[in-house]
Amino acid sequence: MANIRQRLNQVLQQIRSAETRHKRAQGSVTLLAVSKTWPLEDIFTAAEAGQHCFGESYVQEAIAKVDANPITLEWHFIGHIQSNKSRDIATRFDWVHSIDRLKLAKRLSEQRPPELAPLNICLQVNISEEQSKSGLQPNDVLQLALQVSDLPNLKLRGLMAIPAPCDNFDQQRAVFSQVRELQQQLIDQGLDLDTLSMGMSGDMEAAIAEGATIVRVGTAIFGQRNYQPS
Ligand SMILES: *Cc1c(COP(=O)(O)O)cnc(C)c1O
Image 1 (cartoon, protein in one colour):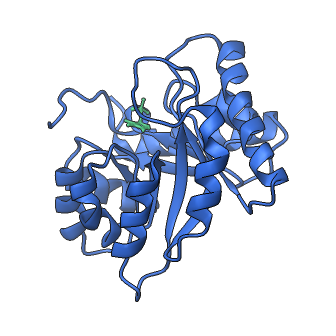
Image 2 (tube, rainbow, N blue to C red):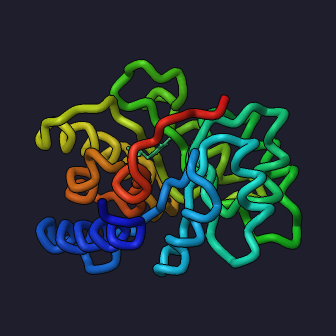
């Protein structure tokens, strides 16, 4: 079986060739390696192979990993955040992709240490209206985007979406194109956005075709996850 370094390089090659195929600038898509459930050694292996950005979804696990991390990596929180855990995130992370309510955004802004750069934020959109309770309805995105862009210690960067799993490339693209159009509506309203966080191991190429700037890839790098800490 291929190791983490080989799989990471494979994913990077897939990203670069998808950029070419879909007329995206070379290097315009950033790989976020989703390391949730995997131990620090695996993160270090990927970091030694050149990977810089890592994504985590579970607060307790994420805190332990960031605090034990002696090298400077960029940390993105991509999971659900209970309000009483917001300080743990505000003090440690560079990005949060999963904002879907004003109360949480306000807390993160208040709790962001002033000596750190503003916390980069994506609003999570519930685009295929499935299973997940997380994420804003598309109609609610503009209002929250305007509110978040006024908060002092946050920097609103764009939108994040986790569509329902689907194997069909054209259907995947159709959903991602809705996210792209929603982002364009926000830009047309004067918001300065540069990030579309969309695409995972199973739908990365369709997301790149529709303008993703960050793809969040776990399984294709680290392997199949076989447990979920609570
Ligand atoms: C786990 C997770 C991913 C990675 O999914 P894979 O299918 O393993 O690539 C991406 N985004 C979010 C929000 C996740 O929770």
